[in-house]
Image (cartoon, rainbow, N blue to C red; front, top):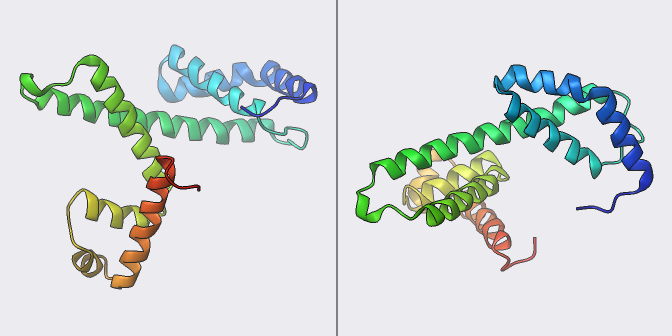
Length: 171
């Protein structure tokens, strides 16, 4: 986490005092769950700790933007977890991973999802067509109506991001 200066702590404290109740209500309406709303509100204010708030003129607009981003990520994690649980339920008992293994695999899936989310849409699609559907570059190029060079360039971009996430390459 970034180093906190006393001025920022005071700004976050003031922001929290003035807007926590409002943000909690906003998130509770979106989620229908007070406990989850409290967690996401806390995550929103945690983000504020590392930001320079000295120029913040519209605190509720800023909090709404940050909270919506956190909410979108939360929904994506929930959807991924649901799909994972459905996959586990469809597996034969002898190949179902242990709860510990399942947890590690789910975390890995969430990391991959976040990584893919960072890619531009076309690059992500090229990568998924190649890696998940097993299509060749020429088939991808034809399907997406782009050049073979574009497919290769997009795959290179995706692979560099993957390797940098594994720590094998600097970003």
